[in-house]
Image 1 (tube, rainbow, N blue to C red):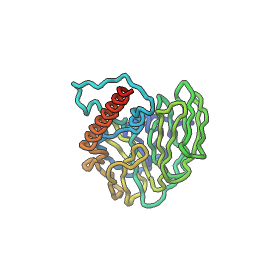
Image 2 (image 1 turned 90 degrees about the vertical axis):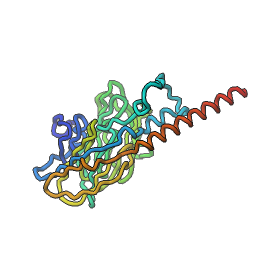
Image 3 (image 1 turned 180 degrees about the vertical axis):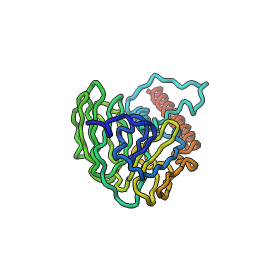
Image 4 (image 1 turned 60 degrees about the horizontal axis):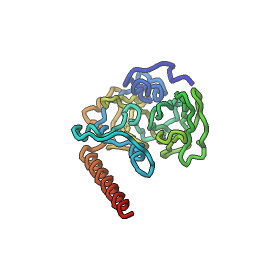
Length: 275
């Protein structure tokens, strides 16, 4: 399957489906923008305060995941905290007041232990084409999705699946447990984009009217919704950044996690001593 427009698109250039940045644009630039399309330029804030559920799952001792990384006391806590890769994990959607048509097929690349993108928001009926770019096979499947059963996808091969309806659908890989993708089916999504590493994004909206700009991460809405009125001119939303997560909440969550881990370790040590 050829990527939309058959070319690599520049960062943050726009179409109806948000030519976001580099390789992500191949997935999301689905419909060419007309000369009348309005561009909504904005930015997100608080990306570093988000925690990918994959990491939260991996550090659970019951998952038997192991790491040789050790915390360094001289490194400040905010720099030790893992945070998402915004250009593939955070999807910015412009939601219209009325249902939208499904776009042409969307290419999702599977490689490097992840999908590109990780979260995507599309109208029901959208067909996703998963392409394996790894030198080994993948065995993708949908969690509790009857229409997406486990099946091998060898190197260079593709597999298609259509979003069955509204809701959140999780895609996993039997051969790579850390690979997780979230597909959000929303009938009113009119355009999507992915922010740059600096947090900048650009949405291209074809029709004037009332829209809601909403960020999604790991299949969920994050941060407040931003209502906008689109006319003929472009809009600069960067003065009101979408705040995705709060620094104080992230620090408190980190502290609670450390205390929990310490408590569990003390409990295990006590039980071991009693034996």
